[in-house]
Amino acid sequence: MAKRILVTGGARGIGAGIVRRLVVEGYEVAFTYNSSKGPADALIAEIESETKDATLSARGCDMSERAAVEAFAKELEAEGGYYGFVHNAGKSYDSLAATIDVEAAGAAMQVNFWATVRIVRAMLRSMMRAREGRIVFIGSVTAMRGNPGNAIYAASKAALLGYTKTVAVEIARRNVTVNFISPGYVDTEMLEPYADFREKLEKQIPVRRYATPADIGGVVNFLMSADAGYITGADLPVDGGLTASLGIQR
Image (cartoon, rainbow, N blue to C red; front, side, top):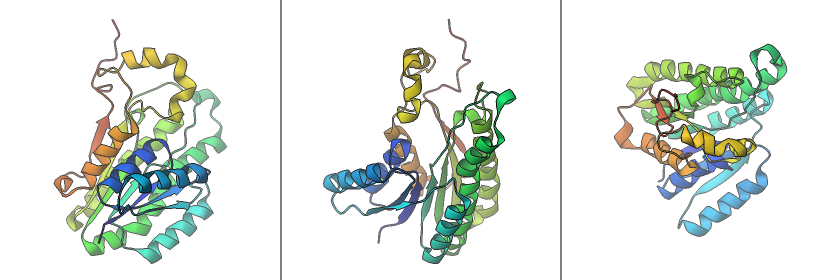
């Protein structure tokens, strides 16, 4: 029987890249979407046409609504049996610190952090009883690097990184790993508003290109594998060398 993995925010962008790779590798994948039912259905149709015996499904859940997350978490608790969980759903919020709107900041924190905490709680006991599990959080290089205008987004990802390390230590003896991936610039719709700056941004990346969703999907697939069983509590930058460089442009 194929191992089951849940991916939040899997209908497009990085999430779709993760879903595609995991299905190809033979996992049974369920993914969530919020307002992207059309793209979710299209992704399923595309994967099923390309991959024999693909097993995947999509479930609607608005991660910004605590009641919706609670209802979804209770469904997961009743189901049990998941081998892996990838939290990719995210909400951006750009504002200088002096003008932060607390309501908008709270909404970003709910999607990026609190929804994760509740879903992990729903899935963890089943993984611990099975003595097998893989949890991966899609974070951001901003969790460890300052970037003007990103204070709240960065704070939500930094909170998730701290959570990663503590939970990893708590459950390590149960053969459940917890890891954090820090993408840099990824070629998705989220970066489309900055298209005019793409050439300049790519020059700051040592490999001279944006990541693709498939780049992130490949790392997630590795972390789900038996080969990654001794990696837990790690922050893995997938950024083309961006955070390794000094950032001084000559």
